Image 1: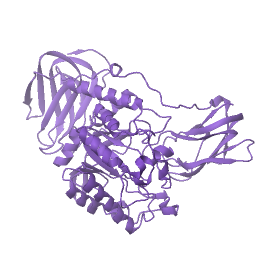
Image 2 (image 1 turned 30 degrees about the vertical axis):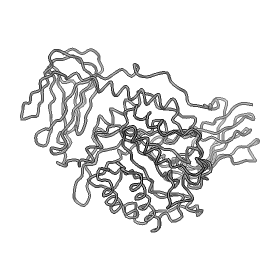
Image 3 (image 1 turned 90 degrees about the vertical axis):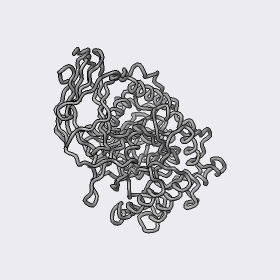
Image 4 (image 1 turned 30 degrees about the horizontal axis):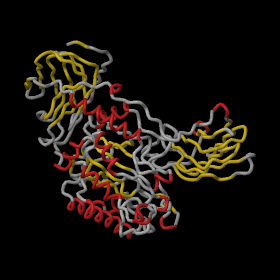
Length: 559
């Protein structure tokens, strides 16, 4: 064996015990997709929000160049096999002309004179491209007057039936975990809590039972456990933990529930003009940390106000798809002979000649007893070059390039005999060979030089920035604190002043989705001449808000 590069790190992994539960055909089909995409587009795109309050007027929705085919073609180039459309987000606005909700749908917008149906267009474009269509329908509805009351449950179930009956086949039922809180609620403008919790209030079991009958191959992204449930990996970074627990229990019975690792292609889910696609290296790492750990990668796409994906997003998807295809094409194992020993605990691959590789891809046959392997090692010409924990549908380990003729996979811990359906040696491509020229985000604005600012705090919830002179204030960036949610600001009021005494409110709102995705928040408003910017934290995710000057980054231009 010859090491071509240094940097391999061998880690000891504890054995993980599993129950012999097999995935249903629908769940296995879901796993075989590997990469899917979820599209966020609606009133939030035009209101520059992540979570709409439910009171944004539909009249602001009027894209001039909307082309669902462009979204789908870009996604397909990125290796996506399934498009999940956010048909209704938390603001309650529907992207189809729902007869159940005539006032807050796409039919009540200027787009196509109120005759448009975006769900129909996306579904048609998706199927024309040979991809699967799926739907996200937010359980939380901040617009509906009856939310958190019995009448809303009937409405929500009827909405799903409408989608399934008129826009099928729908291969995935996406149910968000955000439920209850502040909302417009038909003008009540109050905070509502679900009676009995989400599963009881929404009648989740009955809902999924009914919808599964309408689509026999659909899975559900849901916290309610069934034999067709796929799960959230507890982050929105696109990462599946090394020791992720694939089994969930309900009523004393275990089910195989693999993770769908959702993460935005950009920083956040909806389009914002000062954002752009993540670097290719980040997306590549997320592929190996999701698909390569037995899950599915779900990339969030965000069309812009024109109704198109930004050029930079299209480019990044193309690069990512090309990278993954190159990785999959690099099968170093071709022509090898396979042999089992040690009651099947060791599988040896003998190559025709010494070959160089930098990754191993192991797949268990889940149809034969589910996940069995709890720990393993890889040997090249008798030397251990990699170790890992559980395997499951797919386990990919990357390491420094190695040249060898004999490669052995050894199951160090296994319940029963291993049942492999794949043992492949591959080459990890160089990201630089696929990354094109960076495309900057449109209409970038700059943070004001921090050294030219003076900050002061008023209590623990208010920060004042002094520019030293009158400037054109355009907004601010808020950087959530690290290390927990206690004190993390989730609501704010921003004001400006010429003298530090008389203040004018210029923006008020919330930082949505921080619990799941605590990333930098960009707040912009109409440019205003002022010397001072004051940001008051009005609420926190947990406890009382604690806003610090280091978290505030004013955006302004000198006169």
